[in-house]
Amino acid sequence: MGRDWFADAVLYEIYPQSFADSDGDGVGDLRGVISRLDHIASLGADVIWFNPCFASPFVDAGYDVSDYLAIAPRYGTNDDLVELVAEAGKRGIRVILDLVAGHTSIEHEWFQRELAADGPDPDGDRYIWCEELPGRAWSRDVPGTPAWVRSPGRRPGYYLKNFYDEQPALNFGWVRRPGDEPWRDPVDAAGPRRNRQALRDILAFWLDRGVAGFRVDMAFSLVKDEQVADGLAATVELWRELREWLNRAYPDAVLIPEGTEPRTGGPTAFDADFFLVIHDEHGSLFDNHYAGLLPFHEPREPFFDAAGRGSTRVFLDAWDAARAGDPERLVVMSTADHDYDRLCCGPRTAEQLGAALTFLFTWGSVPCLYYGDEIGMRYLPGLPNVEGSVCNPAYNRAGCRTPMQWDDGPNAGFSTAEASRLYLPVDPAPDRPTVAAQNADPASTLNLVRALTALRRATPALRTRAATRVINEGYPFAYVRGESHLAVVNPRREPATVATAEAAGATALLASGVTPAAGGLEVAGFGYGIFALTADRPVPD
Image 1: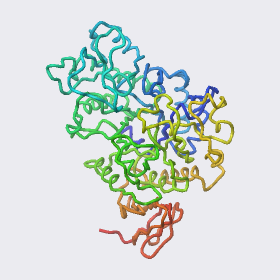
Image 2 (image 1 turned 180 degrees about the vertical axis):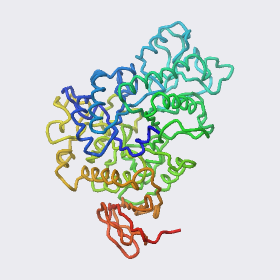
Image 3 (image 1 turned 90 degrees about the vertical axis):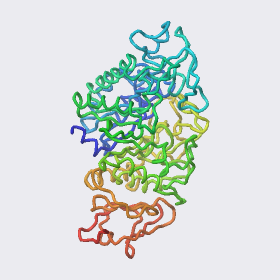
Image 4 (image 1 turned 120 degrees about the vertical axis):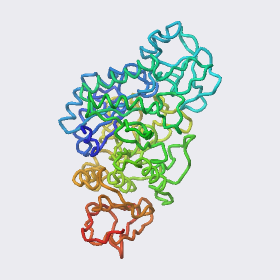
């Protein structure tokens, strides 16, 4: 199919506020990204994923959209995005956008129209309203805050939100519709139909301007009161219909969800699953809890930690479940993202990143680099609440959203603005990593990332379509890709040994701290390696 290109992609996530500021106002913008495209290309990344860059009052950092068809003025114009897509394309880089499908800003014209009305929209409400608070409790993401917000306008009653009060939930209908709550629209009512059509219109608008697809925020929250045990079937069917339309109208366009797509027995609507940083399938490997704990987090020792007390079992079980029945199902795995922490978080230092990056680029997932992780930027604790970054006392997202560190000039080369005008403060540490310093250092994290992406591109067995066979799930973690290559990573401080006759005669393609041992490999603390295996080696049954 036309989307096969995504299987071999390397994504690069850009939080646009913090990447590069071209006009000196302290906030990143699209022209700043254009000026840094050569850096992105040098990483071996061939897809840029932008966090929301649409018009917004920025109560939730752009995840509160006031106009889906306009770039936020602080980032530039629609023409700037078109130019960025074209310039990226010259470097073999595609662009995907973040689609906030389940809610808008209260400033969106759709909401303002319904807010000013005496009652239901005769064309069908785009939002979810009730005149009296429902008898049954029904809540969403932010702990301790009501799910229903009293109407601040002429419209009587309350509206349902998705996250902050300023993010009213769009109406895609309800699965369960008790008789005493007639305001619950069925999924085929006029309002839900209008919103499904709006999704098509938004996607078509930007696909016609050259973008390659979308990552969908809260993709499986659209139809309300669905049960996870039932596979969220109504929401999945909504996306399946959209996918069928895309297959006809834009067959090359990719859709990536926030999270794992429920399996309902029919064809999948999305092109991959996404193992989120804040969920256990990713967090059990990397989350050292330095950035805090959310109510649904289970405190655990991460596998990629110097203490060496973690396990890969939670991750491996989730991986097997995601690919059950479809062994070639793509899974996106990030180094980090805009919603929680970074690889380099708290006590985890730069010397520990090699093992983590080697795993992320060789396991067989679609890798995604979060901006700054290519140089080991640090999560900064204790930052102020900027654009909703603190939505829970134990959950401060600002620390992973700080400005990109380009050089040792003012503001680390991010902006010419006064430091007090920056979107967020720059890492103040005198030894903060920068692109300029690491460019010249062959042993840097930056050049390791480049080496890993180049090796992945040159070696089909290290990409997504080759089989993965685990030969040791503890320390060191070791696995064979495509029955031709061996990867081994030891994220703990102490050395570890893997016993495998398959390593005999293997050729090191990229390695640090790995030496042959009797019947296997000795891996130093924080060591890692990728090896080409011999064709005549003994292979276990």
